[in-house]
Image 1 (spheres, rainbow, N blue to C red):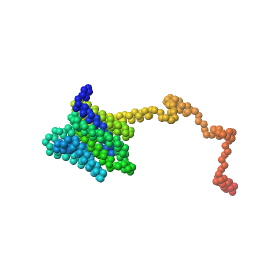
Image 2 (cartoon, one colour):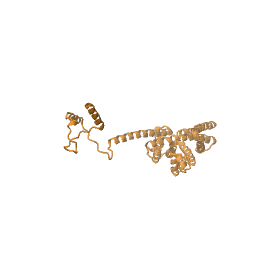
Image 3 (tube, one colour):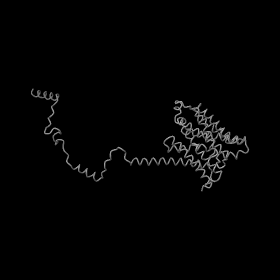
Image 4 (spheres, helix red, strand yellow):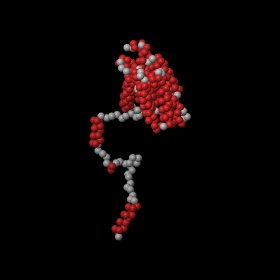
Length: 345
C-alpha cells in the first residue's frame, strides 16, 4: 500500500506537505484570534502576481513571490495601523490589485500561462529540490520566530491595548507577524496553491478551537489537524487520482465538521452523566414511595377524626392550669359604664 514512499518525487512532496501542515496553523492561530483570517487570502493573491512576474522576467518564481508577498504585507500593515477604520477596505484593494497584476503579467508573457497554473491550484508532486530547500528555510524561520516571540504574540492576539500598555512593542510585532504570514503563504503555494493556501491557515485552527481548552492546546491541536490534512490529503489524492491541493483542503474541512460534531456529542454525554451522578456533599435523596403506599396513607389521614380547637388539653409546659379570660380594654369598660348609667337614669 505504501510502495509510493519509495519514489523520490513523492518523498519530496511528503516533506513539503509536512512543513506546510506545521507552519500554516502555527501562524494562523494568531491571525484567527485577531480576526485577520482573510489576510492570507490577500497576500496569496499578491504572491500570485509575484509568481507571474517571475515567469515574465525569468526570475525564480517562489523568490519573486516572496518579495511581492513581503512588500504587500508591509504595505498592508502600515495602512491598517494608520487607517484602522478602513482595514477591510485596504485588504480588498490588496486582494484585487494582486489578481489584476497577475493577469497583466500573464498576458504579457507568452509561456507563463501553462506554468502559473501549478502555482494557482498547487502542484506538490512536481516539487523540486530547490523548492524544497526554500520551503524548508522559510519554515525554519517562521517556526523559530513563533517560538521566540510566542508570549508577546499571544498577548497581542488577545488584547492589543493591554499589550501596548504593558510595554510590548506592538507595532514591530504586528509588522513582524505580517512578514511571517507572507513567508507562510509562499511556503504553502507549492502544496495547495495560491487560491487555497489561506484555508490551511484558518480551517485547522477553527477545528482546534472546538476541542481545545487553552491557548497552547489550541496551537498543538491546530498543528495536529494541519498535519493530518496535508499528509492524509496527499496520500488520498494519490490513491484516488485527484488533485492534491483540493483534497487537502476538503479533508481539513471534514475535520472541522467532525470536531463540531464531537464537541456536541461530548457535551450531551457530560450533561447526561452529571444528571445521573450524585453531587459530592449533598444529602441523600429521600426514598420514593410507590403510588399505592401514597394512596393508603392519604386514605388513613382522611379517615382519622380531626381534633377541634376547643378540645385541646392544657397548654404545654403548664400542666393543670386553665386559661384566664381576657380583661376588657379601657374603651370597653367606658362603654359598659356609660350604658349602665344611662340605664339607671
